[in-house]
Length: 105
Image (cartoon, rainbow, N blue to C red; front, side, top):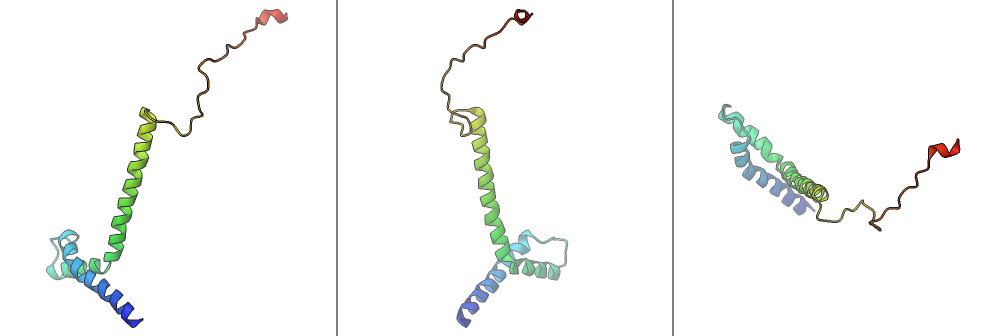
């Protein structure tokens, strides 16, 4: 059990050390002191599982949004069946009977 937790902790710390270079280059302000940039990048690095989850969750949300927009576009432009519309049975509608309002006087 200790080996398992040691491996998970090692992967987390190793990922933090490797990803801190990426965060140092992309997420820190270049006008800060070098020491501040290193500690900020290391703090971002220790949160790398959160950023990885956020990246993949946003990709999934973007794909879902694109699919819903494509579905709406298909309904607006036509060319495909509309799921909410009832089936069309006849093209001829019966004419309504118009009564003379003066017949009842």
